[in-house]
Length: 336
Image (tube, rainbow, N blue to C red; front, side, top):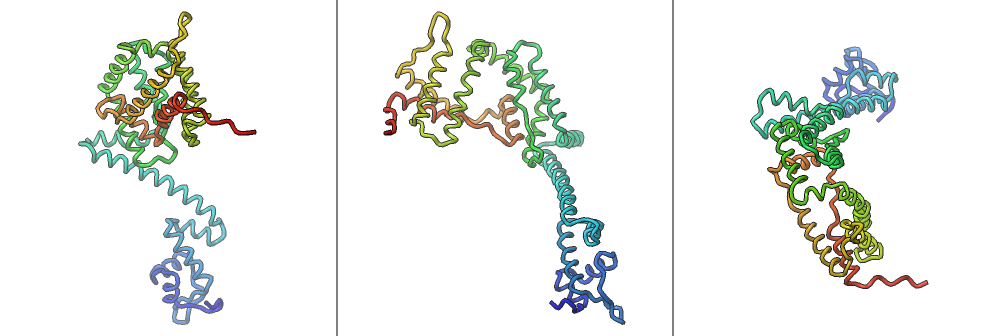
């Protein structure tokens, strides 16, 4: 392309991919004016004008407004500044679109009234503080009227959705469903009944007693060590795997220890039995939650809204590590 040559508007349209009317429009709007005109009034463009028109086309396709484009072309703002401002605008628009999509999807899934649709829209636009208040109100009502262990209440309250700054439509839909769930009075009463039964019947009083909760908390670091070992792809029968298994068994046998009793005896038979129980735990962990159970439904929606499912406990790895301490010899020490 000759830098000194002038091009008719038809050539400019072909080179830039714009229509002739668009080239005229940008000239009339003072965005990119022609370099010259013929005596007959035909517009002529030089290479610089064509380059600016190509930039205009790109920026318009990205959604930039004419005022912003004018400022870039006039040197009053940089292309980077325009891009940053426009990206911020698009991000806010995208968030609003996801919110609308979530509400519309929720409306289509159920027979929604106009009042419910308005509520869904408000729920989708809640701030973090508003979401926290709604969850806190739920757990306050669920735990009122009986005396659950305070530590258990803290654990329950900690199970709440953590929406990211840029949630997906699916996460917003899950939050809308969760918000409707926790606002339902019958659901609140059902969760309270379920937790009262768990904490006060059968083994509930023992399992929620302060000494037992202390013991469960003491086992948390050992479980985390097993999770870390699986993440690091350590073999269950490795030296570290056996150490974790020994720590687990020491913790397990000490749970029921009293001043008058040392607790469960750590025998090979008990280790094999424990490994079998761990495998049964793995099967239980794979059991889908009860879709009709309000507490299971609550936890499933918390996970879906947060988008980060909790890491599964490595029952099978730990079972293999425990079994290895009984059935296979330890690895040989490295030769010095």
